[in-house]
Length: 132
Image 1 (tube, rainbow, N blue to C red):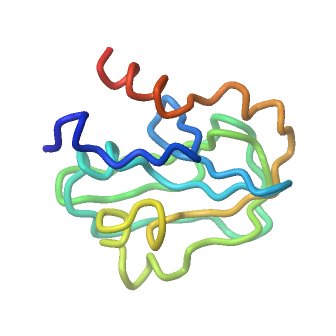
Image 2 (cartoon, one colour):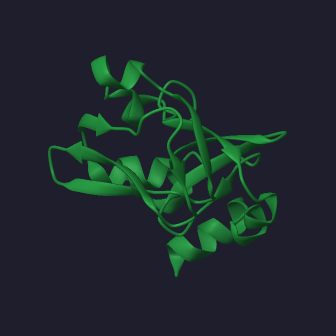
């Protein structure tokens, strides 16, 4: 497993306690799992994602990710409506490991309440949580 200082954690993202990341782009947000999460999971073999049009509240389970080690639930870091899913993960779930911020993103949502973004952590706060 990677040491905390070896993790790739982009500055332009926000992070949730459950290790999801959020990239806000106007009224939409892209969501995936952090480098820390994929590293701890090990080799990802399957990702279950919701249907387009589904609406979730912050904290709701929106899918699951299965690795050779375990199955983990995925939680909404903010509330919103699913407007796009990363369909390439069905054929290439390993992208969640190889490129968690580019090819491994999971869902795009129309943000229901942008104030919820304030509850997320920047890179420095997330690192402090991981060291915690």
